[in-house]
Image (cartoon, rainbow, N blue to C red; front, top):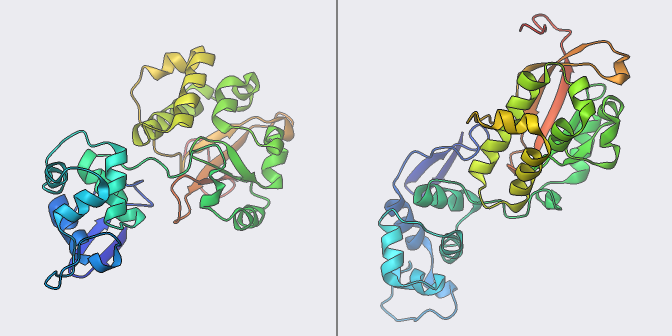
Length: 293
């Protein structure tokens, strides 16, 4: 849990553990009044300036900067429930000079969901992280297979151990598409329907719910459900899964010459972005590391 403190306002935001989960603390009207009050109108070109004017923006100022009516902005600031568009919320966030965490809080308070990623998933979103540092981290996990995926399960980096286990990642590839659309996945992922397919579909449903405007995620869902009858059959269960961290899974890969390998999945997310997922496949050779753990 990250504690954000400004002046006398303190509100906790669940980030690393809850993916911008439910926010507790001050209601939206208190937050928005504070955000208005901290802005200096003299720093904003084009706003009317008077000798008696105090520091802070008025509701009229924010409405003007956001390009909406004062009535519409006042309704938002007062916490009135409405179907506020992402464009409106983003313009208000810009007018108030909100940080990424504050912008996410505005969305959660106003429409009950986080904002869509600032860059399209699966199409060059690597600007959100340091690719060289990520590769260095994965390489230093050897001999444990390690890889990173973006929000759309494109494999954006991996180490040599992972490549030996799953040669298809050498030229990139998509983890979700491989699981559901490549026939070899059913042979290599032991107990494919329950241990692999159901959790992956739960994760896909979870991300689609949190990023309903993400075009790449919508396309991925369409491809999986169109191309895999088994996925369509399982999709009827409205299951939501955030991640598989700590889960025990079994593999039967060509690399191990038919020997079944039990792994524990370790999943991490960098603190600076929620669109990257780092995964380690740790062989269960430690106490309690069995398929029944």
